[in-house]
Image (cartoon, rainbow, N blue to C red; front, side, top):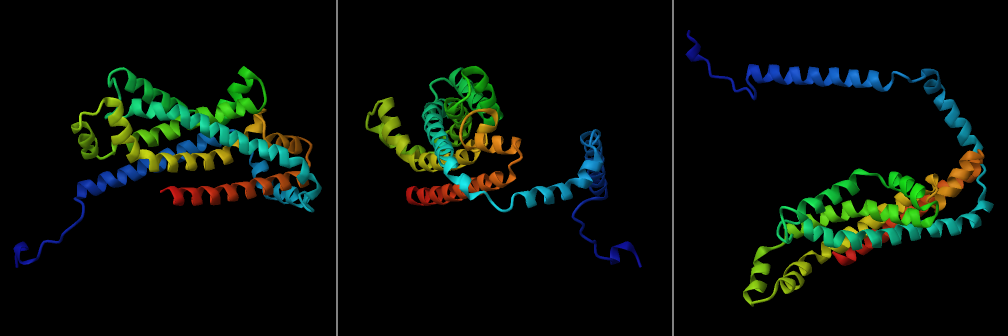
Length: 269
């Protein structure tokens, strides 16, 4: 009986491909072990093993909740919502023209203006809002203005990236139909492109506002105003019953903002 009498067995990968795959997994495990050793080189494991007991101790100090502290939190909470709302409006206003400069089908200059617009978008997305707030507090001083500007600068990258991608995905046939009527460049933009992207624009803006509600709650930790100031003060004084109330209030605010943004996106889109 010869080898031709047996049917050939199909294999997904060749022996060489399987060897390369296993070598890749081995390198990945070795990289993980090396990264773990680097990250935990200065870790004090006695603190880590004691962490559950410390967490249980802090949790016991949070009870009973200090509900009488709620009236003092309403104004900072309102400031937080205003930081998120005004920051979102500012960020969207700046991101709208930048998105048109970044999109391939609308930019006036693919060699100069488009790279500049893309750089602004990448720079905004690369720096966290907390870092923006930390820098702005040092530049313009502590307060709500630093928080508003930080949220706005952070929002440019998010809104600009999603919006310019939506612009590039517009239907070219509608643009060509408007151009065929002899419309000017501004008219083509107004009647051929903007109507197509408006649902995406409003959906992106509302979604970013929802994200900014969450991010603005912690800006007070660096002096940028809002309920984060109260949270930082309560943590510094070890008032864990007040911390628990603040955390519950932040949770409730985020849940409500999530519900509102979902309703708005459903109504718009």
